Structures are given as C-alpha cells and as structure tokens.
Length: 277
Image 1 (tube, rainbow, N blue to C red):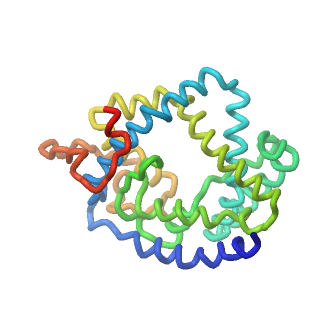
Image 2: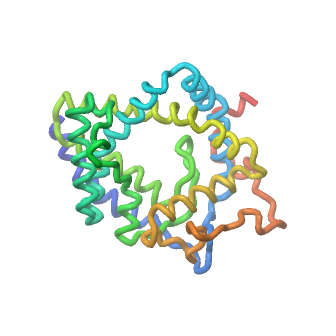
C-alpha cells in the first residue's frame, strides 16, 4: 500500500502537464466555445436518460424516506472527506489561508464531529473553502478550453475535466498508507454517491425545470454551468472574451436560425439506455 501511495504524487506531474496541454484557448471574441456540440448533445441526452432511470427516482425516494438529519449527515461526511484534497489545492494555488482553514476544519470535524458526520467546525467559524484542481489549473494560467458534457458527471470544460481526473490523484489521504485511513476514503466515496442522491431529491424542482421543462435543456445547462463556474473563479477563469460572467448574460438562443445538432450526430457514442425508449 505504501508503494502505491508514493506513486500518486509522482503521477501528478505528468497528469498536470497533460491537463495543461489539453486546454486550448477559445478563438478571440468567442463567448461559448463548444466545438464538440454534437457529441455533447448526445452525452446530454444520455445523462437525461440516466437521470430519468436512476438518479431522479433515487432522489425522490431519498427525499421521501431518508430523515432530513441523516441526509444532512451524509452530505457533511462526504464534504469532510474531500477537505484534504481542497487543502492541498489551496497550497498549490498559493492560498495559505484557505489551505489552513480546510485543514483545520477537517481535523476538527473528524475528531469532534463523529468522524465528519457532524459539523462543529462551523460553530467556531471554520467554513469550507471550496476549491479543486480545475481552479488550480486556472490559477496557473491554463485556459478554460472547450465546453464538455461528461457522461454521468454532467457539464464541464476541458480544464475542469482534466482537473477532476487529477483530483483523484491529489487525495492526500491516499498517501498515508493506513488501513484505517483507506477505509475512511472508501466510506467517503460511498458518501459522495449518497450526497448526489440526497441533493437530487433536495433540488428536485430546480433540476427538473432545467432538464425536463426547458426549450433546450442542453443550452440552458451549458449556460448555467459556465456562468456559475466563471463567477466562482473570478478573474482566474480566463473566459474567452469575458462573456458569460456573473454580470453578463449569453443568450443560447441568439442564433435563431441555427438548428440544434441531432443527438445521434455523434455515432461513436454508445447509449446503454437506448433500448428503454
């Protein structure tokens, strides 16, 4: 186990370099850089089917059956397990304050919050400083790259997709080499899945409105993601042309003459839910 954990930091460097190389800047003046739209729409259609078949019913069941306190504890535990990675990203960004806050929050909630199911750290002012390797890449100057929609994971960009991959390698708990810590990591992964189900139930109306009631749910999801992510990253976002920032609105239907590509315009994408129609 120790040898495997030591290999993680070594794998970080080439993974980060590949991530940086994969992120290509948008052409000048481009507000939404989406050269893979046909493929993205096919993935979006797949994600909606996956939501219809699995995530939405599970969210409804969780909303009806799981007590609110237990649902909140699952979300808190999942968030706590992700704090070491956030602390390390803070260090990589040169943000010592955020790294210290996330580290202190993790230690305090793990020791005094029933391994992270409770949140006593909030009572002393230690609130989560949310970050990830996608933001680290942005701070390092990597461009946002093209918009992507990932199977099951949803909206992203080339930079953020690369960041999600590297975040798997960035979990400092992996480097400890303790069976107890490894078990904690496994439970944290399970809690993350539970968090997605719980939050799907909590935000049922909002998500349903976006996915099932929009005239073009793909365009709306893309717009919502890019605006929110660029607002979160601020000047570091490096968004093409500065568009779709928090103070700007990009109309996804502005080009009224352009027809949306068909969902089957990317034939290499295999939809396992196709037979359910």
